[in-house]
Every structure is written in structure tokens, then in C-alpha cells.
Length: 106
Image (cartoon, rainbow, N blue to C red; front, side, top):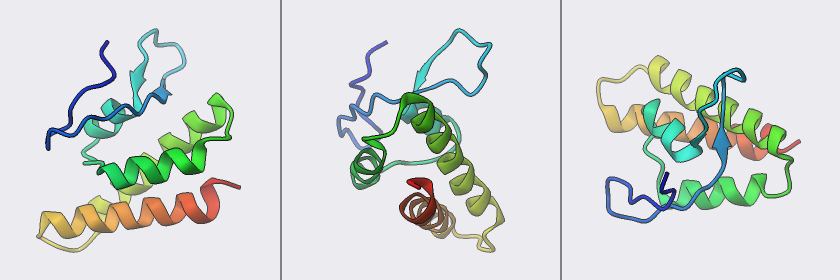
């Protein structure tokens, strides 16, 4: 699988964190793929921010942190009271990034 895929905006992403939420599954996907499947539209700034904070984590810590990050983003987005999609996405991004910065790296 080519992990240097361009995102929807044509920007090359090379975020190589593997996610395997189902441990019995033999399929590994990149975090970008995992996040996109769940409705997250990661910007380059998000990727740089995440990479910087998880750099020193073990692979197991990275996996669990990225799964929780995604869950927080999606849950916040789904519960945010707005009919405007960009507001929901921004609320999810803010909640997930705040969690990662304050609690996720502990």
C-alpha cells in the first residue's frame, strides 16, 4: 500500500502510524486512512501537531492514543449542536487536539 497518498486537497501525507483497532484482524491501515474512514478531514497542521506529540511513544501507546483521538473527534462532532458541517468538524478537531495536548501525552 502506498502510504504517500495525496489527500483531497492534493497535499501529500506521509503519516505512517499504523492502526489496528481489531487485534485479530490481519489488515493494518495508516492513521490517515483510519481517520478518513471515520469522517475526519486531517489538515497538514493536524498531522504535524499529532506527529510532534506522539513521537516518543511506543507503538502500542501511539495506537491507543490515535484511536482515542479519533473517538473524541467523532463523538464531539456528532454531539455538536449545529447544522453547519464545518462547525461540527472544527468542534471535533478542537476537542481532540485539546485532549491530545493536555491528557493524551501523559
